[in-house]
Length: 187
Image (cartoon, helix red, strand yellow):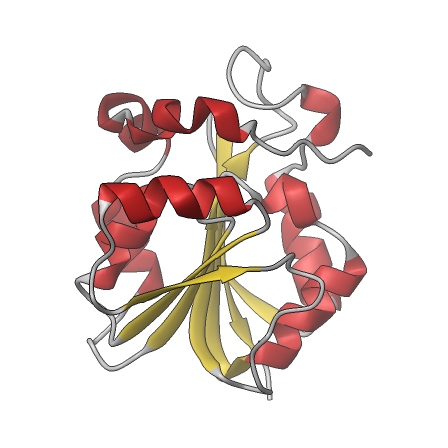
């Protein structure tokens, strides 16, 4: 399966709230993360920080992780919340210590990093009992929006991969064009 990375030249398209919130609302993401305001969280594939901003108001610290420096530049120009730190990195080798994160989330980027290596790395950096929340384009969708269907995963495929990587699945939901999986790192 190929890995589709969003073209940074189109970063402005990621700021369209009407379109973005149809796939994942801010409230849905916040509810899935269950934050109290004391947590350290990573946004995996943060792009322009669209969802990072929604989470930052409910977390102590948020790492906006993206492999494309151009996305971070866009986010800097837009303006960063004080508790957000930009991290230029792939998911396979995150610059965090063991169990350093209380939670991590990915909105429409799981298909870009869905490898055993990346999931093992997430198991390393998310603390036992910490949450991993994924929303992504579904392989069951029609492909009208998002990456090509052959680069996507189904909710059950994502849940199975997370379970194999040491996460317990709390929620697995298929939707019309997307899926949601909420998992907790086991001990």
